[in-house]
Image (tube, rainbow, N blue to C red; front, side, top):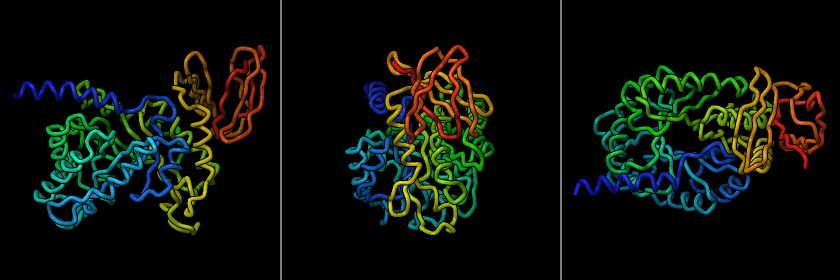
Length: 396
């Protein structure tokens, strides 16, 4: 009997994961946005129409289990139905405590056991829906109460991981969803053996610098993962990262969104989730937390949403083939689809740049802007670049 079950699991796991894989470097397969709603209204349609393929949101323990041992998934059932209708996938965060068992994070033996039971019931209820389940949210920060504790988090994550792998082994399970790329906290997780259970390592690489600075951090994290992975291939997922329009103009916010995602493709990060869908306040003086949206408080379009739409429309179905140039200030990426080729280029500041392209006419299209023609001669193709990526394609 056990041999038959083991054979079934061996056969079932690849079949499910082939149906719902982690995405490759084809635009926009791995592009997503954080949301803070369960009742979606028209939001999911708009998210899909813009070109996003993923949403990420809290899957709240205290919202599902309001009476001990009783789970009400009805609100999330509606959300998952809406996602399916709009061909969107979800990262659902198994998160936070439940005052039925303990205030703050689930640290006691009783609270951990209850959290594990709830996680198991949740994965059973939503099994094989293409969900990526994420283990908590920013446990190295304010959400692990009363104070961050890597050992406490690792104990809970390991117990959840053991339950998932024993009962739902083909479901996608990632963590630890740290704020920043906190190598000290991550090392504690890896030392505790959590890479035996996670399919990817999720991070939130917020910074007050250009998105391109993440490339070195991703490389360092890859090296640390390799030290503990025992030869297993474990990718990085950027499950939350954005820039607020209270610190940057909408135009810069839009530029950074596009480049944040492109940097993920360059670093073999299969999913990049922008924070956030909606601005949470009208007042420009409200805390930065309220100003990360691609739409405003009234759901009106902002420049970031227009650039997402322009990027996904221009390169939908095109796959990153090569990084042609990644000078300290200049980036040129090559995309392919069938026998065709397109390029995407940008630099940090406005500058005239020359590219060594075959002679002929090229269409140059700034994301969200009007296309124009440029000629490449023996000296190359010379165009003005800036922080907004442009699409380059030879004219036929």
